[in-house]
Image 1 (cartoon, rainbow, N blue to C red):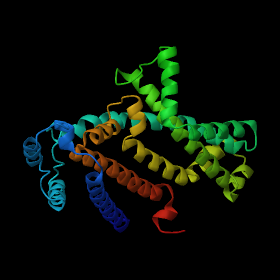
Image 2 (cartoon, rainbow, N blue to C red; image 1 turned 60 degrees about the vertical axis):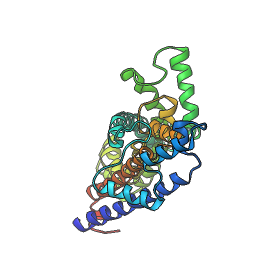
Image 3 (cartoon, one colour; image 1 turned 90 degrees about the horizontal axis):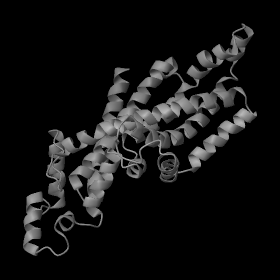
Image 4 (cartoon, rainbow, N blue to C red; image 1 turned 90 degrees about the vertical axis):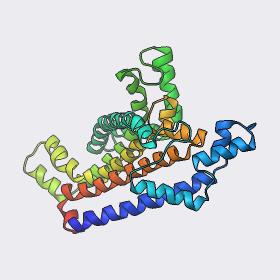
Length: 308
């Protein structure tokens, strides 16, 4: 068990390091100059050179990469080129908003997906099944940048029930959470249905029915638990995406999270902030997937002892 955890942690560190190097190189290959963004196209060459030296952009790319990783080892993500504020402080100020949105979207997804998938699996080829799968197809087909504005037009502009964008209290969380949660629920409901259909055909389910257990107990206690592994995989991947910052949704709703900060950093060519955001996103993926792997062993002893 300990060997497996250490192996996953080592592979996670390698992935994060590789992502950091790749992102650093790609950022510096993207057209655009942060000095030009800050000073404008009409800036004098002497002013440009002075700002490049002040920001450390005059150094060779290899030296900038070395300085970046030496800072990471010390826990220093550098300073924002735009605001001269520590990148860690900038990200720390935006991270809580993304975490709140991610957890709210996950709650919406689970509330919608588990009942829909359960009903569709218990009543296959019925109108309930068709309705649940139709919802799933619609949810997957409508992208966030379409669903978000539609919800704004209906509930904010037309009905006036909810704020349009930004953070104005708990009511501001509803529309972005529903936008993200609906798409996630569409995927989860299909996974719950598929996993439950496989489990409900097993011998131990027929044995439970033969013992006289009621259907609800059979489905919930025996079916859902044994169908949890593939569902947890999807939840882990989706939660990693949400914690990494749902860029489109946060931009549509002007949500002050990591996603919007990433877009702002790209527009300003703020390399340290963008690198910090990508590092947080990659860490979110790695941590969530590692915890998902560890959860397998808790839910299924066969995984823990290596039995296929």
